[in-house]
Length: 428
Image (cartoon, rainbow, N blue to C red; front, side, top):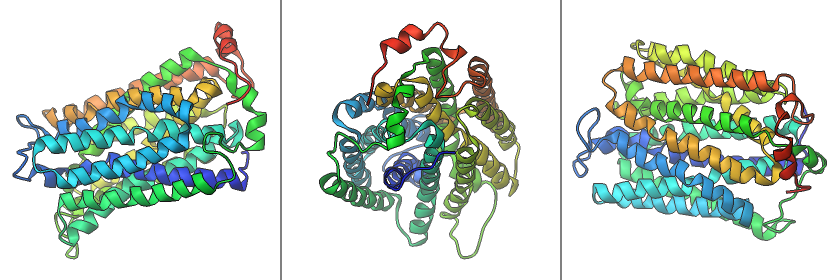
């Protein structure tokens, strides 16, 4: 396991803070879905006629994926840090629009805008980390990055629960979300203006620079298989997380000190915190040669617990959901490391953008599916089948690559040398 120098670690932590916040924004509607559905101004329904709260979640998540490809291209062209500033300030403005929304049309526009600006983060932020790490320390760096992401996923429900306990409305929750984006943008801007390096030319770890020639290999069939697999996982992720507070609200748990309105959010936050265990474990266990089998394990082991969610009742719902989150979120640092493994260095932002466009874009239809599913068995049974398929595709990638490491291309490149050679680049 390679170590990061202090400059690289500081960069990883700053970018990871941006990652935590993007998942607060991405899952913001899930935290207030029940309250927004009950708002008489909007006439939103669940498992009923249009408009459906799942479709509102779709409106946020679809641009979150759709615009990621363009964000990746822009990050390659203009620099990731500038794009991160646009993401932070744009999301803050969209959150304020959601707070202001006088009718359903404006709320839809706010959700779409929030998803559009949030889409910038992943292709810019993940590529930035991948450029400043080596194959030996990249998975650990992305593990830290994933830990912050899981913390952000959990922080949204906790914040919503706390605000509800203080009597805040769902709109005031969005007003509160406009603040951290501005603060983090100021911090990032300070680094842009006072950092040691120009904004476009990022500081590169010395060892990462030495490894750059090895990062120019391309394994395109593996990459295309990977992004199809990610689309399946994205569908499962969006379908389950959008309605997680509603699902855990059926656990029947209560405490005198916590309002019934806030309790599902606290339970959701507690469940999603378990994802940190999965992110950290994957980051610690993974090596360049074990990425594919570990990812297969995460999907295949999580699938039975998704099916169990269809039958779990009472407090068991909390346990099953927590085990699912622990296993499922292990795949994220593995997946991001595999993108870097399969594509040439100079195309990383664009390739991350395409992968997130498909995983989040196609995945955005998960809430619509879950909102219209006739029963928990139909919903969770379908999601289980998708996870099993994703696991099978991971095994295909393992079969193709076997013990091949990122720094020693082997049989997986057979038939692709022309592509790899044509995309070789001596630097970023």
